[in-house]
Amino acid sequence: MQILLKDGLVITNHNGNYLPSEGNILINNGYIEAIGDHIEIAEHEEVRVIDLSGKMVIPGLINAHSHSYANMVKGMGEVLPLEPWMYYAMLVGKMTLEQLRVAASLQVIENIRTGCTAFVDHIARDFVGMDTVMDVYDRTGIRAALAPMIGDLGYTETLPPLSGERTKVVPGAGGRKPQEILDECEALVKKWHGHDNRLSIMIGPSGPQRCSDELLQGSYELAKKYNLGFHTHLLETRIQAQTATEFWGKGMVEHLAELEVLSTQASLAHAVWLTDKEIEVIAEYGASVVHNPMSNLTLGSGVAPLSKYIDSGINIALGSDGSNCGGSQSIIKSMQLAAVLPRISNPDYRKWPSAETVFRMGTLGGATVLGAADELGSISVGKLADLVAIDLAQTTYQPLQDPVSQLVHGETGQGVDLVMVGGKILMEEGRLTTIDEQSVLAEARDMAPALAKARDEWIAANQDNYCHVEKVYSQHWGL
Ligand SMILES: [Zn+2]
Image (cartoon, rainbow, N blue to C red; front, side, top):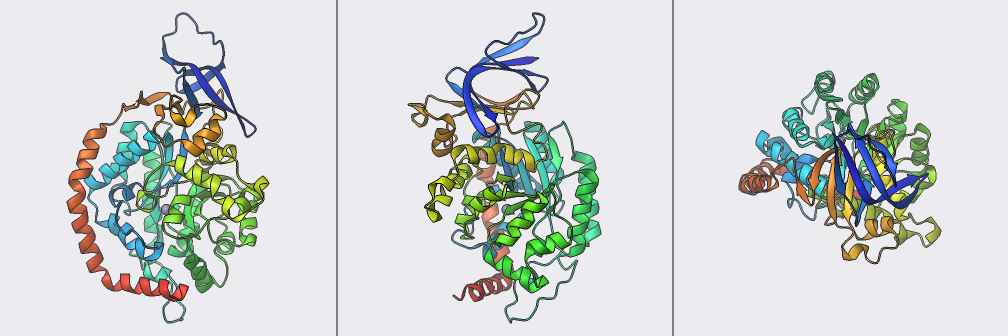
């Protein structure tokens, strides 16, 4: 069946300029077949007409860095910087499959409700539970790229040493052999990549400092073999930059370049503590940066040099990171912060990112990270119908002058009215159609006591390591 979206205010991309115009969109077999004032429809065709007058139609937003499991550990580890905070995030290793399923369901609900049609789930839990999570994404119709978060070094040895002595790096000390990890990644690729033209797998080293060279190079080779994304955290905190000097006697980006793991397939989440030279190297290789401003602020990690990335022509996408370090999955919030944060440090307003610039990051920038810029990220004939309609009958949009600016600076997600992925409707008139939201919320609510107990036991069992990491942090900052 075809779908005709009628009389919406359609936001189309004309070389980075987003022009609103009233019109119709015809969707056929999941793809955008026509856009315009008058669309001819053959009489014998069955067409569902959806009236979108008073609504704005945008390309679905893309969340290019998130962690679904983190939906279950929200509210834990508040007022901590990344290094000790990681112990609260590591609780994922103690989660049950049911908890992972509910976490993935919350992920779907919140992304849809904030106008996201696709996300990268950088998921930790070794390989137990990947199918559980992918089953949720399969059933609910969301577009998702699963990047199992892999590493083969123990956590404390990926930090600068307390004594001032060089840390001994032992591949496999994290409990897994590189080849064993890569074999499990490959099995996931064979099972899920390309499923329903909607689900995909990326190879996701947790961070260069958490992986042996063997695992990093093997990860990249696997990504190349299947033409997959290579997704990793990079230089999120200043301590990580120090770790690079400790480990390799050079910058982390230089290390990645020497291992030959940088290319247009690579997407680097956070990228806060890069030198100008490192930014040049990333630009040279055509890798993407995924900006996670809310997470960086929450964990006190710093402010990424976004204007430098823009000037270098690097593809920039946006992420929410986990809901345990930013409070939500909202890419709208990421767009707002991406637009305004660079204004604090630079009085030259001609360099400030415009709403259009950050809207591109939240759409086409993310599509590029997914390796799907030809199919996603803008409303164009021939692209997949991943579309979102926003109700303009809100104070945010009246009086309406600049729809994209008013969306970026004022939307909360409340105006999201219709969401479709590949032409399939996941939300209509504000109601989710493929997932029972109330049941998921009730399940999550009932799991709270067990999660709190698991957290208390986990932190108690790791008290020595936790104290050690706090000392490393204090030593680094001279506290
Ligand atoms: Zn992250």
